[in-house]
Structure formats: structure tokens, C-alpha cells
Image (cartoon, rainbow, N blue to C red; front, top):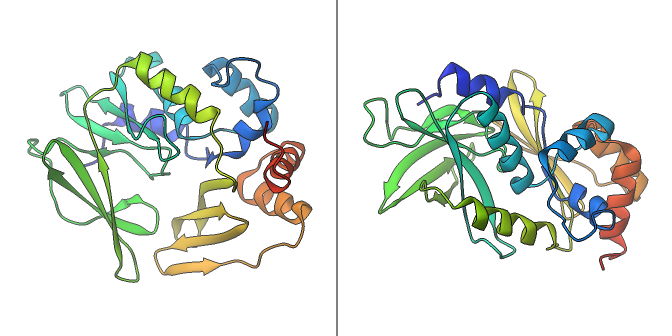
Length: 254
């Protein structure tokens, strides 16, 4: 179920890239008419401030890297032009097998989604998603991922593995950069003991999801406290963090 070396080596470039909604809040006022950043600007922001972006930013950037490496890939997603929109990528190996590459949900590595492949299995697998085993099952024309958590709970997510037209995808990306939930979000993969865990900051709370369960963290009383915490976990520039968090905290969206 693992991807080929060339797909994995490209994916690994993004191992320390969080998925978050802080960057788009920070960039919104600077952006002019177009809010979705070009890859060149995303790279410049990453060099300057250590910031990445939301699931559309990450998918667009990953597609660009695959293209440079000669790897066939295309965008997928669901609920476009709504607050529930999600974007990911399918990459094809040299045998034409399709692999789900979802940086937006902070997967540890791509996973095979071609159920006709001799390498496919619907068994529960470790090492693909932080703090959970995953199962890939077909449901009509979609692929369903079942997440098995350490506490015995399960959750599901569906993916349509068919390509989305790039024009539609970029329109959805632009819509996403203009749409704000009222609470900030950042998710990242972090080393923890003998595994890679999932750290999440959401709704002014934070916690670490591990194979042993969830570790809830005390919440700081101030924005400055959150700046320090997020900087420590994700390495983001403190000035950018402060501006973005103030936009969310004081509802400074326009």
C-alpha cells in the first residue's frame, strides 16, 4: 500500500509543513484582488516566515513539486466553494497505480487507493496516519477511509479519486482563501517518543494525538502565550502568528 520511492521522496519535502488557516488571515489584507498565492510566493513566505497554508495551498504546492519531478498527479476534493471544502492530490506511479496524497489532513505518507491492484488490502494499516490505523474500502465510485483510534472509536472520510478540472480547482481555492471560520486552526506532525504524533490548535485549545491516546494541553490566557506555543510546535514566525491570531481573536476580518 506504500507509494514508490519517487513519490515518497517528493512527499517527504513536506513532512514539516503544517496545515493551517493562520496564513490566509495574515495574507488577506496584503493580497490585492487575488487571494490564492502562486507557488513562488508560497515558497518565499516559507523561506521568510516558515509558514505553509491551508489544504488548497498544500495541494497546489505538492502538484507543482510532482510536476517538476515528472510524476503524474492531479487534484481531487469535495464540498468545493463551501466552508467544508477539502483538497488533496492523487499521484500515479510508474505502473499507473493511484496514491492518495493528503497533506491537508496531515497524513504521514501517501496510500494506495486502486482497489483492483494486487497490492491493495482492506486490512487495518499502521504508519500512514498519525495516532490511528487506517482502512481503505470502496464505496460505490468513492474511496472511504476508516480511521481506527487508540480508544476504539472510528471515524470515516470519503474521497472521490477522479480528477477535478484545474480551472474548477483553482476557483475553489480562491473561494477558500476568501472564506473564514471564526476560530483559527493549525495541525502539524511532530516527533513524540517513538512515533510521529499529531498536534492540533483549534478553537483556542490544543492537544496531542498519539498512539497511546490524546494529551490535552493547558490553554494560555493570552495571545502571546499562544504565539509561543505555536512557534514552539510549528516554527512559525512570531510576528506573523501574532498578527493572524489577533485577526481571529478580535474579529478583524473585512
